[in-house]
Length: 190
Ligand SMILES: [Zn+2]
Image (cartoon, rainbow, N blue to C red; front, side, top):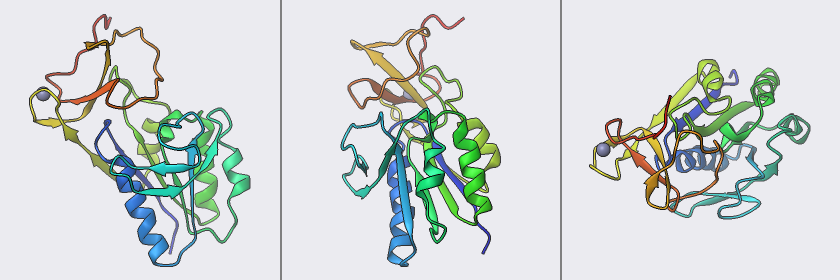
């Protein structure tokens, strides 16, 4: 079988990590060799595990966001699938890492945010979506109206964060909401 790049994406609280872990767990049940990587800046639940919001977890190797190439040296040839969580946090080299793994006939499942809180493409996700052989696009529920949510709203002290706020701020429900298109607000957007 030919190796494939699968990308799992969506806004925050759409279940991306859940879906990544579900996919990898199936491979583990099939007794295939699985390796999972995560950016070392995401220590929300654990430094060396990926934990979904519903508390399912797998061991993960933390990697510096500026040096995704490290992944290549850590993956033995007999690996069947490499999972990468929060892939949007890695530097652009992550795209080449995915390509090299595919060349070595190793499947890749990459999960991450498609857009930042401003609605702009996040990291290399745009490129990965174009390269993807399979895409799982997940949605959440709007925190305000209950309709389908596809955006990530950052909040600061209960108010929408301004456009000029920094792109990366690792957080959960204290800083972010999932919202629909109508309720997505980015004050100060030019
Ligand atoms: Zn809404």
